[in-house]
Image (cartoon, rainbow over all chains, first blue to last red; front, top):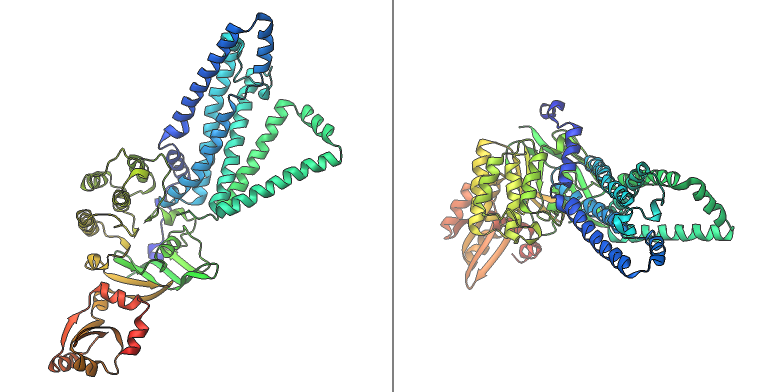
Length: 256
Length: 296
């Protein structure tokens, strides 16, 4: 049998194999890039129209008030959720295909991590740049807010905005990856069980904090942390999710 | 010959069900194998185990002398065309054919293109929208053009019309002659592929019940046809695999006969007819075999 042993030189190098997985994810870029940018454009146009209506209708005194309200805009939130869905679909169906194309789980997962981090950089650049334009044009000329909402800090410097957006995309991608890995490995029932357990832990934690009257302490923890600390901390959570997803996927079998 | 695939006591359990049960097989290089068996016999599970897609409960697997599980060096030389392969929702035929070459070092693009026109595949159609036959054709193309040293086809014929099936046999044989490799074909359409298969593995309820060269298997049984009394007299004390009767005429399938026995049968006025591979597989795996033996 040794006569047939594979000569290591013939094996495709790891970097090439990972690159192949990235290419597989992007083989049809429409879902992952085309579609989200299109929806983003449509939502932006709709928001701009609404800002215009406000500008026309509102009395000058109320404009400031409206601008304050718009700082709580959740208009850009969907794109993060969409990326979580992208990650879930990629991990579920592209996983089956990758194994069908003789990829290993390890290569597939590492290649997916590279894809997700790359996409996070791509979208953070777009998001941060739109935020910069929004600031420079005083809310697209209409005091509108979509990319500089309160969740990323109203007066954050532009450099940090890029970083925050990156952290947020990474977070949603890897939470999605962990959810999908759980689903692929243990199917619907396993995923439900995990979500129930996570829910219990969250509610239990909240209960514990309430009973011990620690909410002010939690509040001050995040206040001290600030936006920079908070978003940086999310990277740790994302990394843990990525690691958990990997451990789960390593023993997963493709659904049929 | 050197085995490219070797398993020992390979078992995969799902709860109390053993989908693959104590399978020990050796597959030689550059031959065409038929993996035959009824639905749910364990064909797909066995192939999934051999390609590292499923995990064994116990036992050993060696492909090219190494475990295939998470082994990139082994897997890139293996191609498994799964009947139930899933694709991303937005994938069109062209996306599959664009990405497959990245994963198979021996991919032949010209061959793939020729096959696309042979099968008249619409490149721009989504995988989800394909007919069953077109869906199978995509798998056949990937399996053939990948030229992987070990290629598994799991029910590659599903939905293919007679012309498309003939295209598949012809291309497979022609390409196999030029680029020898190990092919494992699992199928229901046994008679159609019988001439293609050099070796048959018959799996039933997770166990390998036949592991033999096709020629040997074909000669392993014979139909004895004639009047009821003559047939009964001849088969008395013999293992009868199957027995059919219309009126006074009876056909009984028995194990291989010696030349002397054949002469005896003919002089008793009995006719001997060959048993097709498909008939043989049916006889060996139908649940009623036992009954027939007892009634015989």
